[in-house]
Length: 505
Image (cartoon, rainbow, N blue to C red; front, side, top):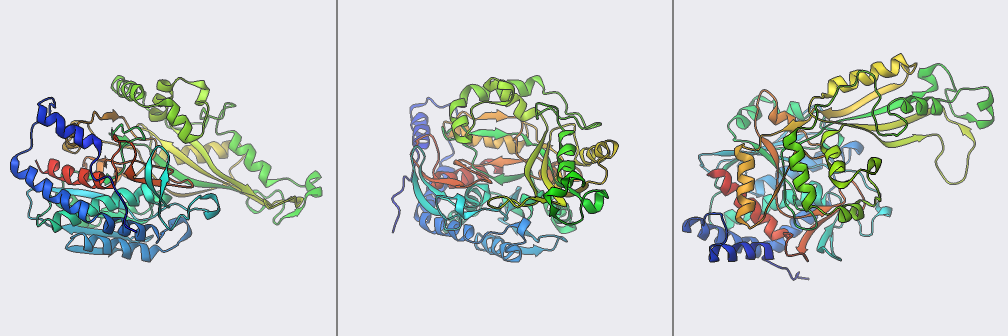
């Protein structure tokens, strides 16, 4: 069944009206560029259904690094998508872990831009979803419009597919991209990118990236109210597992035994719980790891960014979407956001040991494990955080607990006056939007591999559109927006076309 769709968002129509009446401050695009964008827009609209089917097929193939699921198939699919979008050189790169993809598109342009993609997604339990997570159905969502529900819909296959759709439309319109492109795509982002350096630092990849003006990741950067964010960085992360066992401890059982024996046998599960309790204060939030690297204080400039953004973002909507009633320490909205961008975290993402099925089993488990993620902010490094954690546990009698680090990297940041960021602001303002600058996202991506030596490139995220539920059930990406201020799929595609043109200038 062919979808009925809103081709132009009211936001773009408003921007056009402002330009015609002379009320917009952005300069009028040259006639030739305006004609080119109009021709490309027609192709975006004409190819809408094909682009949606392409995204649905991508979601139907989940590549899950943590489960070693569809690893090779995911890389091959990513490579095929790149070839179909016009990349002339595409190769699958072995990394020692999950394979990556390296691709180049030579448009004969003076400037070259880097793209960072991820083809892997998080795990999922279909029983928790209202719509099958691999079917990528388009459903009506009150207040949002028609959304696609599926694992990877917004993180990150939806926005990445929109960038690829932009390249398809440019070629179908008989044009060439205004910039050359270098693409690196990995299949391990969701486990902390343990081999991203091996991919990016390959001589041919490094050489290609050195010729770029920066690297960006396609994203959906509007909230549900249409506020567009330009982020200047991201927190770092360490993913690890702490394991307490009778074997390593030398106390407690080396196999599960009857719980009545707890009166005379130590418990590895309680040993782990006691170790975890030393990592934070009684509030559960203040990190108490001895020797832990200290974050640099939030700057006055960052505070100003947070204050401006907090004044425009809806606290009530944020609480509703997250399903929370209060922020840490009952902080006001602005202060809670300051904490969000400036503070590291020690989070327990999973805790398991022994029997967890229906009813009771009355066992004393021989093993317990906790999966943690540590978010890092400027002034902190992955190496220093792990070293401090290891020494902290050793000094407190928990040196037997295994620390299995599965991935992670340092925080990253890009200057607001870089060409990559200025082009984003230019595109958004020409559309009549008033973007907010944000110091760094609370989530993480391996931008360090681009911003740190040897490349030292600007890196960030860009893209109109909205989605939610990343890493959670019912992850979604807006296809046809019910809110005129929020871009639907076609407008997200056009935002990438316009961004590439802005980067070319």
